[in-house]
Image 1 (cartoon, protein in one colour):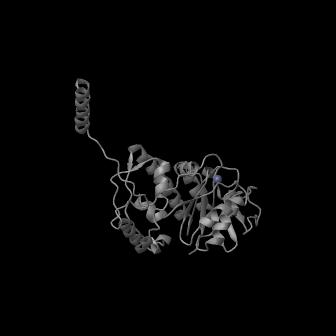
Image 2 (tube, rainbow, N blue to C red):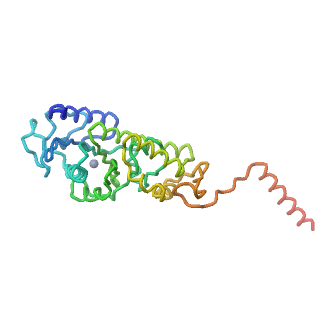
Length: 292
Ligand SMILES: [Zn+2]
């Protein structure tokens, strides 16, 4: 049974509280919405913290983003409602959208570092490929225009250059889970850099993961093109710009190459004993030359 408008307003308040508690948004940042019918949306208001929302704060808007009834507390809908409506119109299956500024994920969008593929199973199954839109001025039509080309038939998360994230799903909980998983994934990447090395799954392992995802009933655009090598195309740029080395260079069974990375030969490691032997040989030669 569909939820009542009152229940949806309560859900928006509860998700707002979680977003604020997890520090995905500071001050009055961020906004989220649910689709009530073909041309009616419940949207969080502008200018107040998402941690302190009450049902009376939530705005009911039409598909132009205009209030269709006076808000109980005189609130105005978020100025980013254009982003939400653009996504609802592009993807009729989407019923909830969350725009947020999760710090770990936003750090990548600020640094211009693409998120890699083939690193963590949860990210691959629940997020899939996450693209980053060019920076666009907030509160203008530029913002939805920058995001829309990156919304595919099945994806659920897009990063916004120098800004934040947008996650969308069939319900509010689903959009919130994507937000949590996105920021946890980016936190793992940052910790991995501290540890020093990164393992990237090979094409066969990614293919297995996409099969598991398919068995869960979750669609992924990449399933159709995994055999043509469509996965990991940004991994080279990620490794270069993030400044982390592949660990054991899990070899792609087909071409002996880490998925999505170049074929540069691994640097030879010299151990202490070899170094001492080398120094000793050179020293002997120098002494011989001097004696000669
Ligand atoms: Zn924002």
